[in-house]
Image 1: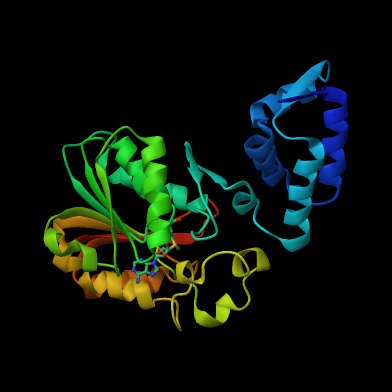
Image 2: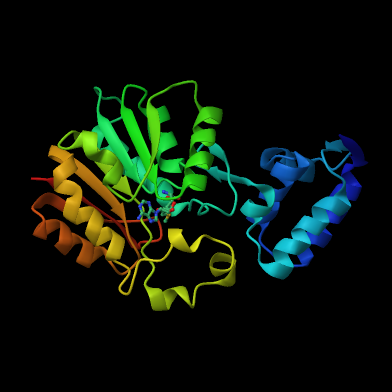
Length: 289
Ligand SMILES: C[S@@+](CC[C@H](N)C(=O)[O-])C[C@H]1O[C@@H](n2cnc3c(N)ncnc32)[C@H](O)[C@@H]1O
């Protein structure tokens, strides 16, 4: 730990922010690398006296900030950390950075199943960093969860995040293509969730460079119309869901109606498109018969 005056620190902070970037990313950097939490940062601004303790020297932190600004490297990859709901997850560029809009999936589950519930089986297809499954396994200690991914590196990150966040053992991880790991769960799942890759091929080319140059392609690309994976997941879901089991899917901003039609075609009922906090039709849910 290094000790510096609060006055010097606040001057340095103002200089860094004047170079560009947003305050939220800068706060993540200060928290993860400097050990200065956002709430402590607010306190310092109110009372800028005395000294503070910081984990790294200011030049080192500034050079990480510069890399973020110059190359558009996501701050979460540079820090190796992402904050998602109340979780602090370790990540690398082998996994998608879990988005804040995806946090709403957990609230959708709360709305459907209530805060407490009897034992249920849930599945997450394409878990990435494990964010969704870990949040659910913690919120529902009596549920049994299975989280899968096609990418072995992603699964390792997810299972380590689970070990770091929980003392429980109600979440298992399997590697495989969409429903392939669920052979033993035919007709048994109460809930299946997926935020699959859904970016249409030609949209991918125009993604912001902080996404296109850094995030795994396999986590983003959804084929020509973006619906390749969603179509496959919906088509096979009836084999694995219990009667009245739920499916919750995240989709691209303009895919809600098409995903809804796919669910109806495969005999799902109670089909609904749900909006995220920006009013985007981000999620489509349904119940198998
Ligand atoms: C959009 S990311 C979502 C990650 C995480 N669930 C989240 O919400 O942050 C999609 C995930 O699906 C995985 N994936 C891609 N193709 C797959 C396949 N054929 N079978 C299983 N998982 C796949 C990717 O590796 C990636 O982790």
